[in-house]
Amino acid sequence: MNLAQLAAGIGAGLAVIGAGIGIGRLAAAALEAIGRQPEAVGDLRTTMIIAAALVEGVALFAVVICFMLAFK
Image 1 (cartoon, helix red, strand yellow):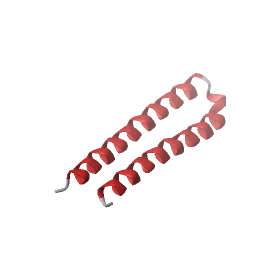
Image 2 (cartoon, rainbow, N blue to C red):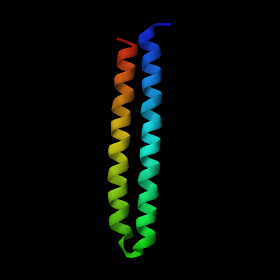
Image 3 (cartoon, rainbow, N blue to C red):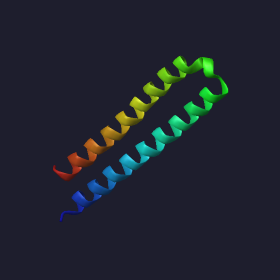
Image 4 (cartoon, rainbow, N blue to C red):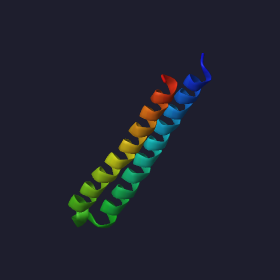
């Protein structure tokens, strides 16, 4: 196995783990904020969805870069 493929696999795994941790912390903070101020659910939901999309976008970009390195 090529060393670049191994590095790409490790990099993709780390990107996915980082995205999972980021979205988990994001959801926990949003739920805590909703618990403190229930009337702000709509604004918090919108902000949370936008932030989750940005986290997933960064993770997807990292995975694509890892695959590009593996199959160059």
